[in-house]
Structures are given as C-alpha cells and as structure tokens.
Length: 346
Figure (tube, helix red, strand yellow):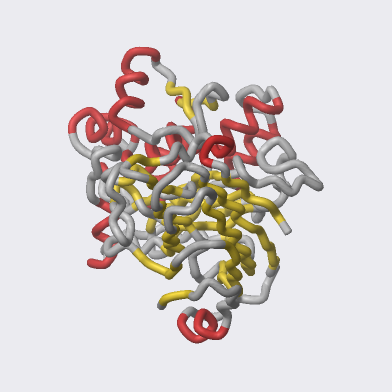
C-alpha cells in the first residue's frame, strides 16, 4: 500500500483487517511525529507505529510534508508495524505523522497450569544476539526457578528476582541497550544490575526463555500520566512525548501475560521506597498480570531487520524509536535534538 504526498486518513482498512477492540475501559489518544532532517542527501525514515492487538487499535493516520513516498511495512519475522518514508535531496526534509489510537487497560487472569507451546510462539523461546539463553543465563535461570513446575511459577520467580536484583540507573541513555550479555557480567561482578526498562525487560525475557517459558519485550510509548505513581510517566498536562518511550515485557502461559519489573524499580527510586513498603509491594503485585493504562504498544522486534532493510544498524537491536539513514550513515535516535524529531500529544 503506497501513500501519496497528500494528507490521508487510514480507517476502514484497519477496521476490516483487525479484530474490534473491547469497549471496557476504552481510551483514545492522539499524537504526532514531527520529523525534520537537515543533512544533505536522500533520506530514508522508519517510524514505529502502534500495533493492532486485542487491547488496542490504530484508528487513523494522517501525513503531511515534502516526502517523495510513504508506505506501511512489516518486517518478515516480528511483523512490526512501520511507516516507511523516503525523501529526495532537499535542503530540509520534513514529515508530520498524526496518529490516533484506541486502547484499554490489561488485566489478565493468572491461571496456573502446564501448557504446550504453540508452534507459532517458538520464536519467543529462541536466543538473539542480545538475549542469550545458554551458559551463564541458563545456569542463573535454573537456580532462580528451582522447584518451580509451571510457566506461571517460573515467570513469577524470575520477575521477583529481576525486581530485587536490578535498579534503575538514571545515567543510562534512553531505554538502555538491553544487552543481557553485558548485564549478566555486571551482575557477576557487582551483585546488582543498573539499567533502564529495556535492560530489565530483556533480563526477564532471557531468563524466562532459558527455562522454556515464551517471553518477549514490548516496546511502546507513554501517552498519559500513570495511575499508580505520578513518577512513572509524563507529567499531567504535558504534551511532549519525545522521550517517553518505555519497554515492558510479557510471557506466555496459555495467553500473553504482561509484566513490568522496570516500573517497580523506577517507582522505588523516584519515591525513595524501601523493601517491604506497602506501596512498593502493591506495585510489584499489580504489575505482574496488569499494566498501568498510560502506555501504547508498538512492537516486539528484537535483533531483527526492518522492511525494507536498513543498511547501517544491522541487526536493529530493537525498534522503539524513529530510525533514519542519510547518505550512508544513521542518525542517532537517542539524540532527538540532533535527529530533529519530536513526539507531541494532540
């Protein structure tokens, strides 16, 4: 599907292609990517856009700017929904992408049983370059889950371990690199692992996969103030979402079950909570099987390639940020000021 330079609205096709969203606790949010590329040469831009799932749906998308072409794509493995845009060799290349999403909170029943993993989920049992499941990771996972029989028991043991043995490090850029190889080395050396949401979610995923529980990171964007703590998300009344990316995780035990160990550690740091504090204990229990409905999901891509394939950063570690290439080099998506993109709530 190719888009013209004119503004366009996508609605009917999405409604026909994807299942209807349940109406309970439904919310709607809209935001705009405002991208400006000033480097000379032709440019290619990949934007992560909201996924269509049982808990959210992209209901409209409008484009304007001086781009030459734009189209929707999905990578062949993770099916990450992407808006791919090409620019000619203009002095300044510009595109504004307006998106509207309906979504609802997730509260998943925690039914304990032993499940046979469907073939189409075996991808989420495999290692990737940044998410190992053998060697030291396997040994640690076996130790953490010793005596646990079901996927639910194993996942909760891993979740508790991550919450207790990691901490939020505000010096880490963005969501963190999520390189479990490095993080395990840090744990062996220091006994604690500092990082941010992609780091903690990736450790959870690696440890779960190592003991046979399908798991995956979910990359997305905070769009509202959080319910359980004002320290977790954008401030009330704020419109700037440019640095509001957030990575959660989920594991499969008959259904996908959301978890967010990173927000437990963020709340612990931001509110100065100590182990055993009732607020911290509530957050830890709540964020296993639920997620605070201030966030929308983009995709599950991890160590994969986009569509069409990027030339510079291969494989893509994860796809939670806009990514652009100009003249054979990649712009730094962790520095939106130099990349010149903003994400604004409308």
